[in-house]
Image (cartoon, rainbow, N blue to C red; front, side):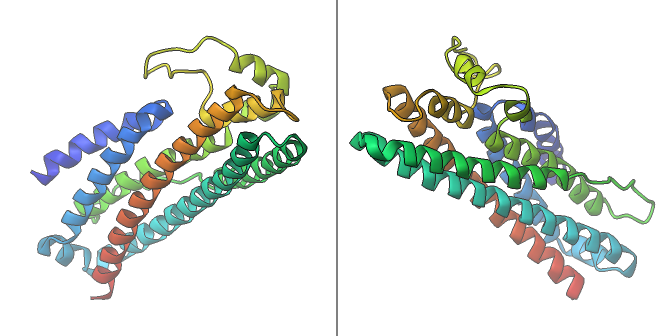
Length: 257
């Protein structure tokens, strides 16, 4: 039964990371289920006995190192979301009060923060390339399963960080007014194509470029949507991190017993 559920999880997770944001919440749910299955495997006596054997320890060490990297990346994503959310809340407060003398300063603060976040994410993305080791005859099937989970998780975090930062072409190929023009394009209505060509982070960037020293109902609305988006991502990341830590603890216990 566990094997069947796990196979279904792998199939779904292979495709979900590349869907638009409105569909990636489903990925969180799917991956949480997959990590729960992993934890069930790790608590099976036969699995613990097999992974505790000397010839498996090097693979367990490799997985522990991989899990630590994933948790580090998760921490980077959390910090980026928190920093952006704080700026969104500060800017939203100023815009609601319509304090014109404060708007320019708060917009500048937001854009400076976004620039710092993008720089951090760019650095993190460069360090996310992983090498996939091939299966050996000595490798237990649970090790193979955990490697698959790692192989699925890294691209998802890459996709999420890119979502937070915005497409790389945004800073290198598109001017500010190109973003504004893009914001005004007709919206789509299907999940597969996204309700807009831009995600919430891009929409806010574009709205602020268009209204650097003034406010508009559209700016307030896109900030509200971004804050909701951030909350969804934060909730998903927090739950995902708990699952990853739980699996890491299980592996450490197996290695040390």
